Image 1 (cartoon, rainbow, N blue to C red):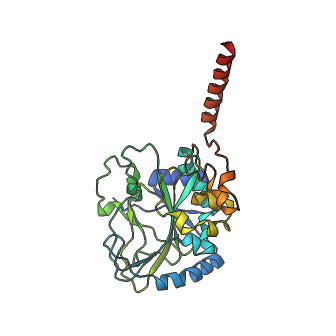
Image 2: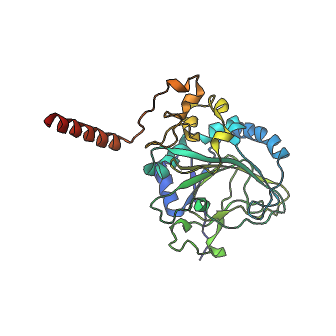
Image 3: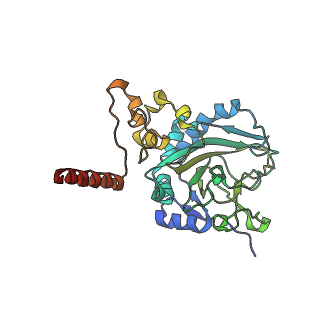
Length: 301
């Protein structure tokens, strides 16, 4: 049998068709989603951070790989890319049916240098120790800031592995492929699909930006409140503030002083705050029905 491949689509492809490919294969490459001018600015913003970054410690992250974290606060283009309308539509399609709102899991630069070995094949959603899963917990967008080739460590993907019943099964070499990309392309893949960074036996580093999204009721990979504290996040768009977690996820997750955390962006006095209900519409209706029935019973006594 021929080796599998990662399906490529254009940015003009219908979102439902893109999501159908992801549902089938666990991954898709969208071509040319980042404009050349934005890509150049992105690389300019990233360059000093990668120059200062040290190589990782540990066999999983890779001793010849550099990782730059919390890019949401370090790069203006990263903030634009994180809220790219096509990517957000896809992420909401994949995850939004299982939470009130999705959130940002991480923004991380990954630069695989020459001589780096292939990474251990893994599933990213293993960070969440949920045994029985009725839904996807997370999904990633890997943006190519340099060419992704088989020679320089293009991401290894095992299409269809998100549907394997035996989650402990290790893939055969014939079941793997590599997501080759041009700069500006993006690989979107589910957290449940098996993947890894590839071996770099070229003479140049391979640079990609991993932007992850997860269900709004999960703990994030990066602590976004330290990555972008209120004095930083107050300058972001409301959409990005919500993605970071500066919003209540109903019912009542993530409150600050009984209110939405975004009050931290303004001057306020704690003693003047009123604790509010942050319930789902169904819960609001249930509570309202209970109160009305209780009042009716009191009047009847």
